[in-house]
Length: 345
Image (tube, rainbow, N blue to C red; front, side, top):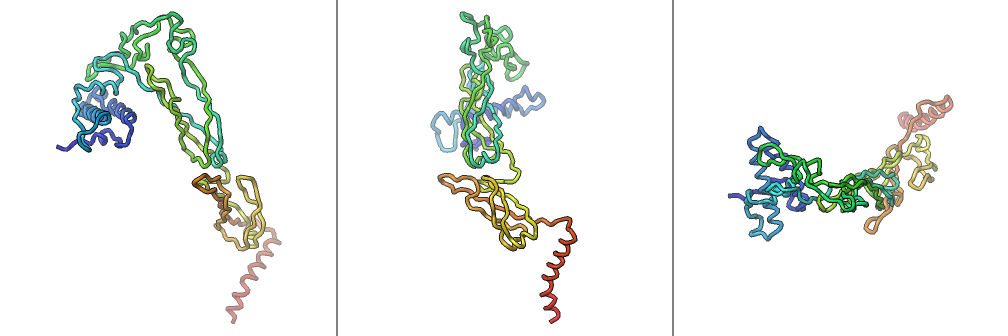
């Protein structure tokens, strides 16, 4: 009999960490739970298959494998860890166990030039932190806890009949199973209060739009002394009016008249350092690209500085004075003269 591909059942890679696999399992198990799919007779089968796959992977990660590519078949009905990882409760329906805190996301918008050159910036994140006056206990000095009257200390309310009878997290005690008999006047017995934290971030040169910086342990507080979550900073680069960027290289377009393109001459072009003079070659054609070495973003130890590329766009005037029209006709006549002579010969 073929051994099931447990990673494929959970839709994860064998390189995925156990914590990420646990999160994936929780999401799928809640989605396939029989109580959430009353009209689907296959829901219980999918639910058991997910639990079997997760338990097999968890067991294999914690002990040596008997043979490469094979796992011990778990006995689903006797694996209490499966219920704890999914719902945070034991099979007996006791109170919720410790769990990691939520991850936070901070969207940071930076100027185009700062993304090219790099920058240091400070961000402020509003979050909940342990209340200082009560040190996170939620109690007044000398106070004590009492069992939550809503859930009777279980942390969850009872649901309807089904594979598991435990309903949602109790709103009164927030899953703790107990409440403060004499709550702290600063946090209302929650043990948490508002806090603003400042973080200094280094944005390296060449940072792309959508780059993410992860600050471990700077997310939400864990439940029942569980580890805190993480803070993820997502960088958004403002577009520039003139420049676009590919890696460390910069690209821009410059408009010149057809007369200047034909004759050549000095023009002013934009750069990150400000406008500078550029000698446009005689006979420049529309769409030509010129390279300015080192005019892009700064380099690094493993990569040289970027370049700036100029694409020429030749413009044609919509209105000409009589004198301009006369001069252009003369140019056309002079250009056509050699060809007319060749025809007569």
